[in-house]
Amino acid sequence: MTEERPQSPGPWRWPAAWLRDQAFWKDVSSRSLATLIAGGLAYLFALGAGYISKPGTGELLRGIIVALVPVLLGVAVYLSLSLLVNKFPKRIRTILYVPTVAVALVVVYVGYSLLLR
Image (cartoon, rainbow, N blue to C red; front, side, top):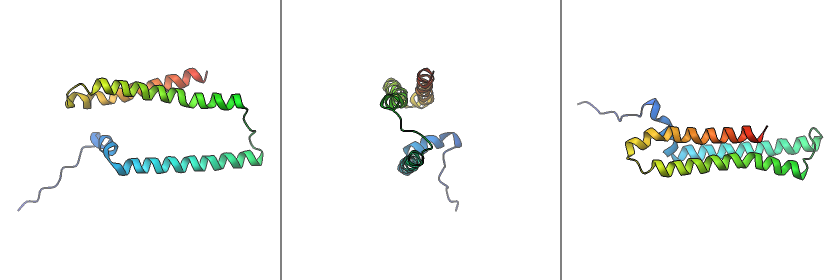
C-alpha cells in the first residue's frame, strides 16, 4: 500500500504557478493598494509639514508622462508579442514566454532612461 504523493512543480515552474493562482493576484493588488495609500499619506504629511513644495502643473504633467508612457509602451510590446507567441504550439509558447517578458521589460527600461535624461 503505497500512497502516491501529488507531484509539486519544480522551482523553475513556481512563477508560472503563481501567475495562475488567484490568491497571488489578490495579494499583489492588496499590497499595491496599501503602498499607494501609505505613499499618499506620506506625501501629504511632507507637503503639509513643508518638507517638499507643491509641484507646478508642468512638472506634474511631466511626471505623469514619465510614469505612464514607458509602462504603456511595455504593455503594448508585451501584448503584441503575446499575440505572436500564441500562434505557436503550447510547448514552444512556454519557452518563448520568458523572452517576451524580457523584451517588454527592456522597452520599459529604455523608455525610462530616455525620458529621464
